[in-house]
Length: 174
View 1: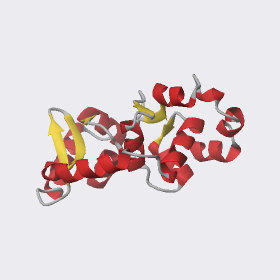
View 2: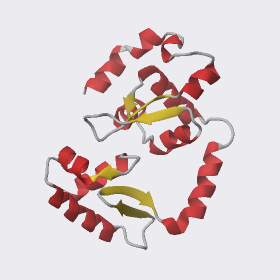
View 3: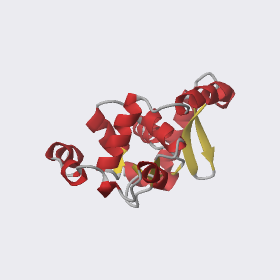
């Protein structure tokens, strides 16, 4: 149960309510509360990761003690030109969006959490909650569309062909 919660908190990029977590884990809130306590012990003051709790919401965060290092790293990540992995991720989001992080990672074959965060910080993609899922979806932002001189992702070259490509559709259905 604790490992499941840890996985959910890891992929979630925002605070989650205990009720939403319990529903997704198909358990009761008491079990989630117990698992949160175990994770808080696991990620003690010596860890780079903490479990933050505010009321009935919980989120996996970086250790506040290291905020200056994290800020320095993120500033270096968002300045300058996009890297090849960022461009690849942005392309997949553009042509397959709205797409969840696991779907994106299945397509790219690598963890995309940091890249997604950087693209959001740059204002190129947006994260939207899904009503029936813990996982948010990602899609191009209005600013990204504006930078490309288009008003919709459907205007991208070969959009219809690539959006419905059989290999990508099979990946998302699995």
